[in-house]
Image (cartoon, rainbow, N blue to C red):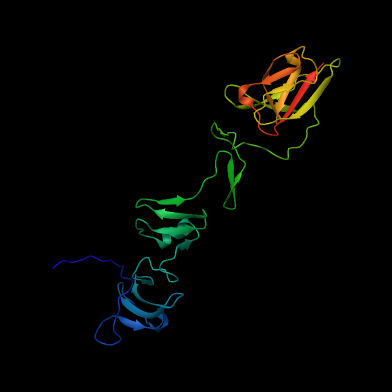
Length: 259
């Protein structure tokens, strides 16, 4: 004969007849009991907990407690809520591997891994922070960080304020590493003047006309979407951006030229 294993179920309570010679008292409420009690005494109560479940209770020397140590009077399948680690340890004096609680103190789920209670909680680090369990942008970078873009997935910052302060610095990109740095604008002497031109590029454009004839490349600064970039002079009226700065449609190119 073949025996087929189907399932196992936890025993949540032990049924007991309402008559007979058994030594388990049957009561409707705890108020029906009269002390003294002996540690290990059992009672079958017909209404216990918030859901008025029928349950087997045992006297532990101080109070009547459910025989099933993980009994949850509101929902046997529910996640037990504790107010703190102390409250958790009071309810789980002998935790089992896999026991779980929602801990209000850390605002996280804690799982017992057979040794300690592990907190399951998202950490916001490296430029992120949490606010009311919401992860938001903003925070200290704790390691070198790279954002990789391509011609399809570009990076843009909209709504920047216009600077009117000549002492403000500009953002530059290291031509070898791509690291963002700040740079002071070249000083403009009292005898120097400047002119500039703004051009909205077409896709793939890399060459641009300067507003004046080129006499000294040191007197020219080129900005792509607000970032200072390198270039070379092709002739006395044309510059060519570095290959890494090839433009996309509607990139804003600003050429500032001193004279």
